[in-house]
Each structure stands twice: as structure tokens, then as C-alpha cells.
Image (spheres, one colour):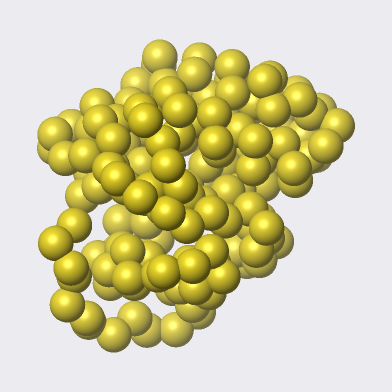
Length: 162
């Protein structure tokens, strides 16, 4: 998987103001809708909500990975937001979430799509990456931290109170 094929710099938002899990999904839907203009952001939002009803997409440690299938989508597309203030995402560890990576995939999944979902989930569970994402102060820094997390070893840095 090459993250740059899945997520573009304009699909990343740092210090987003979300009031709740639902509001964070709305923000993600708008970002994901920009990557697939043929799909209404409202449809993406409804699919993300439906997926959340099947089970929480919180990965623990303050990270969530909402993802869903969307009719008409030809290729996987992602968006990343770092929240200015964490929200309750019903994560199994009870921690509030401040890093949210959203993904839409085609309705018909093949082995590559499943592998991408698993690889993204594992990447988001990486403590060094989480630290680097939380240290980002701009959307471009957040994007660079994500892409670097896939391609280079992440140095240990002090996490600041998150």
C-alpha cells in the first residue's frame, strides 16, 4: 500500500473543532467527499454512521479509524483529522479520541482492499506515529507525519499530555 495513493494533502485537517463523534464523522465526510466529487458527502456520512452501528471503529490510545463501503467509489480514499479537543468515540479503552483517519472503499472489496484496511489500522496503532501526529501543528505537518510514518522509522519523542 502506498498512502499517497489513498490520501492527498487537501484531505488532512489539523486542529479541527468537533463537538462529538458524530460531528467528527461529518467533518470526515466532507473531506472524503472532496476526493470523490461524484459521491455526496451526506451519503458518505450515512455509510460511516451505519458502519459505526456495527461496531465502534476506535482503535484505542486516542485513535479512531472509521471506514465504510460506498457505492460508486472506484478506489480507496482517505482523510485524516486531528481534533483540537478529543471527543468520546466509544473506544474500548475509554480514552477520548483526537486522531481520526477515515476511509471509503468500493462496495465490492478485493484482497487488496482488505490488506490496505489492515495495514492502515496497524499503522495507526504505532505509538511513534501517534506521537508524531499529535505533535503536528498544521495540516501540512500532519500529512507529512502520516506519510513519513509509512516510509521511515519514527523517532521517539516526548508526547505532550494527550
